[in-house]
Image (cartoon, rainbow, N blue to C red; front, side, top):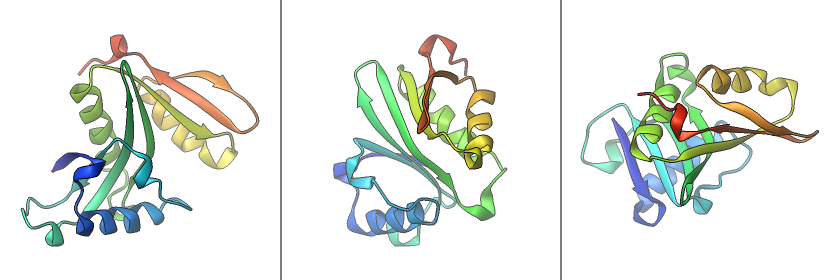
Length: 141
């Protein structure tokens, strides 16, 4: 079940679960910086304390452009389409261009390939990062 929430509408229980989940994949959580969050729960429980988070993506909405950040999935659910479903959800929910940044490091090659396979193109790179973009005209779902 994919859930979209404004960051200000996340209750403390889900906020704690999301922070813990993000920290399994990243050195820091930037949950407090996002306008909205999209997360994937593998159960339909209405009780937030029963929800298990298996995917996450943070988004900031800039009119015609959505910045996506910290896409991550539970290690036990990787290669099962969770990240792709989260991206498709964002693409169909927001009629906007999508941008993201990836660290310019050989350890991130699989992530770079993941995004290019899904229609993102590199628009900039330097020794620190890649900037990738997917125009709304190229979103075909």
